[in-house]
Length: 231
Image 1 (cartoon, rainbow, N blue to C red):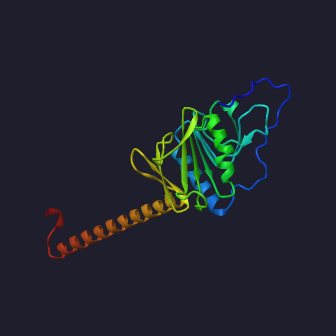
Image 2 (cartoon, rainbow, N blue to C red; image 1 turned 30 degrees about the vertical axis):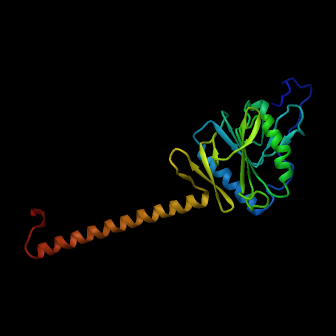
Image 3 (cartoon, rainbow, N blue to C red; image 1 turned 60 degrees about the horizontal axis):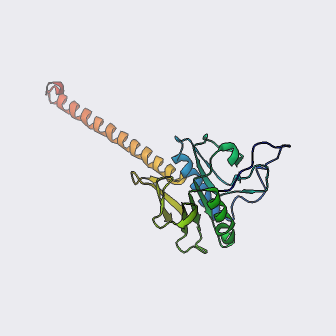
């Protein structure tokens, strides 16, 4: 485990929250990042957890240059909500899962420095998603901590989140292990809400038509001299 420096500091240290670099390498990578962020954020809304994206993760107090900016990281047992940056020694928790949207250009860093760092920090699972399939044929490769060493994940399960991961085009599909239910991305959620509204409107229209048919029948019975309320 990477050791953290003690709290005592002779001078205040500034920890930047931005370096001016682009959020993602390409539009495809950005879409994968944002979809993953929003799906996991919604999934963990009722938990003592936070999901952060592209925020600096500081892991050594007093050394602001010792930082990394995971594409998406999930941290348990912390106050929900966003942060401008995340300092491990202040929050007291290391991310349990980190997702990196990888590419041919970031391959060496993702499988070298970042993988080693996350392993040393004790991040339980580390997932590499290659939305363009540039160097990961299956597009998704995960690593799970066994003791203090990462081993490849072969079952496509994210154990800390209790989710099953599937490749769906250039996005990761997330499915609950307990119910099999898919966690919808914003576009899918909007479409589901639209279909629900249309179904509700259709049901209301059918109910109105049924009421109209009943009233016409009652009127017809009255024209025949039959009181429909006595039938």
